[in-house]
Length: 139
Image 1 (cartoon, one colour):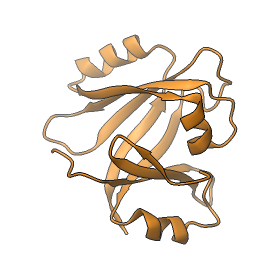
Image 2 (cartoon, helix red, strand yellow; image 1 turned 180 degrees about the vertical axis):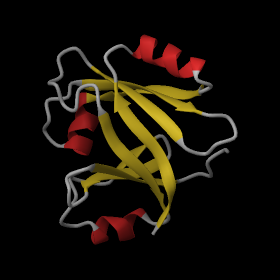
Image 3 (spheres, rainbow, N blue to C red; image 1 turned 135 degrees about the vertical axis):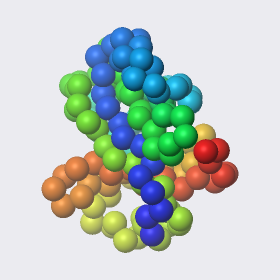
C-alpha cells in the first residue's frame, strides 16, 4: 500500500523565478529534467501538453519534495499555475494499478529514471501520481 507522500507538484509560469523564490525559503535543488510530449501523452492522456521542464526541490533533512513544472510554450493551459498532483511512493505498483482500475488516467505504467509510475484521480478528481522506485531513494 502507500508508504509516504513523495512530492507535491506545482505548475509555474517562469521556472527561474519560481526556483529562486523556493531556494530563498531553504529548498535545495535535487534534480531537473524534461518530459517529451510522447511521455506526457502516456502519463496525462491527450491534454495538449507539448512537453514539461521540471525541477525537484527538497528541504534538507526532510523527505518530501516540491516539484516545479513549466509547460512548453505550445501546450494548452492544463492546470496552469496551480497545484497539479500529489505523489505517493508505493511498495508494489502492480497491486495499486489493479486497485485503481476505475480511477486511472494513464494508459500504462511508465518507466522514468528508475521509477515505475502512473496517474489516477481520486473520487473528487484530484490528480494522484503513484510511484514505485526501482532503486533505494537517498534521504
